[in-house]
Length: 313
Ligand code: FAD
Image (cartoon, rainbow, N blue to C red; front, side):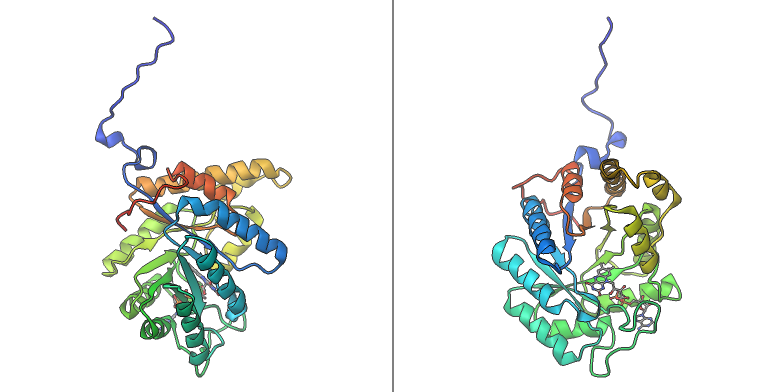
């Protein structure tokens, strides 16, 4: 007989790929930035509305460098509370602001019904590469800011983590020690800087666990909407861009459609590998665009209207 393919309906456990077989649920969260112009505002809200039915665990809204988007971040978060079913997390930094000013922002979130803050120190006011100077009347560091947030209300507090170390940090060990201080101050989740080599993330995770830190370290995934922009962003943040990633986008400068397909394939490959290796929570840097993130979430099994199962963090 020809043309018949033997199909086995059950495979041995060792063959199961959780990313393919839904062997464990995946929970996602998504990050947006506050829009600067009416056109950007339209793009943001179209993206939020497109992604909302996938019921992310939370959506976070960034706080511009030096508090430059204070009002816009607040307005965006407030609109999420009022016009969607999404749970917002407001980013907050302590750069160039007094304690009173930061406390006022925290209280305004509390009044708006926000219960989750992503607490950050922020970049130096004089720009990247300069020495960070806390405001003389401000919070001195992220752990200090977390303590301030917790003193004001019962907020869930997430923080940053750097698998390739923070650019200002002398060593990864110092970075992990700062993470421990943030956990001791009350942080219950860390979201990583983006990375493209999953081994980097897992090596970091091993070190974090060996240091006795047991909060979820949620991988931050940046789908490559624009390779050049991603490479320059990576340079500023200390994330490395592997040669194979550059090679995948090579020669596509004038071919936006193929770039989009490659971007989806690259991100899918990365998240499937994370899930196959036990990751249950993923945070997407959406860059305020829905289509790539929507497609990757669909591949991960998320469907409109279905509540995300509570994955073990
Ligand atoms: P921390 O983790 O507190 O510290 C960063 C590094 O500074 C440490 O690793 C260490 O090297 C050094 N350091 C700090 N304290 C000490 C200490 N006590 N002793 C020795 N060394 C110390 N930026 C924004 O402006 N707005 C945002 O909304 C925003 N969102 C972000 C979200 C995520 C998930 C991530 C990963 C980053 C985000 N950033 C944002 C960037 C962030 O503000 C910058 O990377 C900033 O330079 C550091 O802030 P942090 O909270 O990560 O710093």
